[in-house]
Length: 205
Image (cartoon, rainbow, N blue to C red; front, side):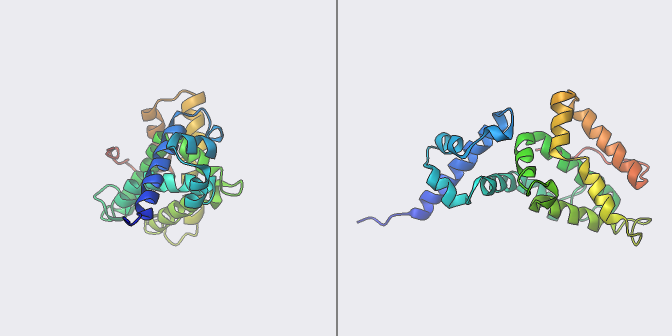
């Protein structure tokens, strides 16, 4: 009897679920509209498969978010300038904020769904804590900020300008174009940090 391949089946189901969830969150009016039953039906699997693979809806959203975010994280950790580690800290902070904003502009509903899973606080989510730590570490290396004791708060204040609910409000209700939102964040961050110039736009693949 041929040996069954449960790992291949699980991998195939996982890929189908993530692809289905990605499509549903992209097309939805609000992330709360997307249920586990919707995702299971779109992926062609049973609800039990979703819960076994991801635990719950939050786990599924987190897994999809991390999959979509992986290219950005790789660029931050080992990529070329302006996001990579060889970039001077001030320019890297500005590029990092732009990259986070662009990611949320491209994945608005998914980001909004994840920010709403942190025990009613977006500040308790794993992805927020990660970006805050990276940003604070960079701010600690900027002359004039290092050693002042304000880098922790400054990192929070800068990241607040990239919150998914703000991005959704600016794009959906205010109708602001992408370039205008990016330019606004760049100017705000540069003024906050006392920068004379802002970096060029992050390359988008």
